[in-house]
Length: 273
Image 1 (cartoon, rainbow, N blue to C red):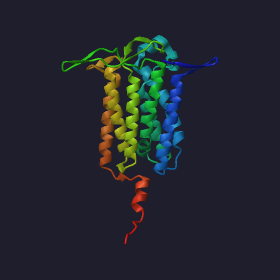
Image 2 (cartoon, helix red, strand yellow):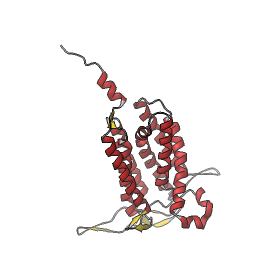
Image 3 (spheres, one colour):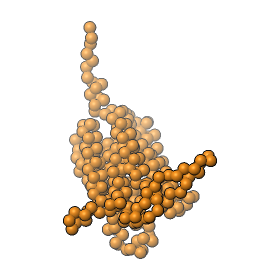
Image 4 (cartoon, one colour):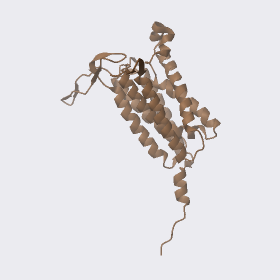
């Protein structure tokens, strides 16, 4: 692993570098989404503000989720390069975007629809930072899997040089989440370009992202709290329910037709002789 890039006497954390690249990727996708929808607002500025607030929220959530760590390290845990909770970032980031969408007169839910693909892709890119730094977000130790009389040996990796080193092969869950983030972002981008009810895209984002996080938690190292589920899985179930509810609500609302689709429908049809 490469927790730091050594540039002369300066050590650049790869997690921070990938977090910056995630913000850039998200800003590019968000800007294109706004332009495609012909929305006159600062998408890049919204992403930047939501990112800063989301980072703060992810740290706050992590502290609340791991009180033992806070009691051991006190306020130093807030400045540690490890320990970021996705649901804290999601909650604080969404609340910030709702407010900015309302102030920009775009509409809170429509703003979330436009930014949902950027959020999924940005999250996926950011997970590469976890992978490169070896900050402990990887999975449990690899063991043979027995299914229907067959034995499979899943591929795994050790992180001996990570921030939180481990020398036995484990599931490289940040890579799985990277792939899931890109796939979800691609699907949402396609759906955003088609007629949809307001809130449908962010509803699908919440449902798909929640399902992806729920599944990957089975092979992560987070402690189980109830019914054999981790805190992240319990939060995932809530996120999936909210996502399904928003998607259902959007199906009962007037359809939002993307700008290009409106232009195509309004274009005069050429008559042929």
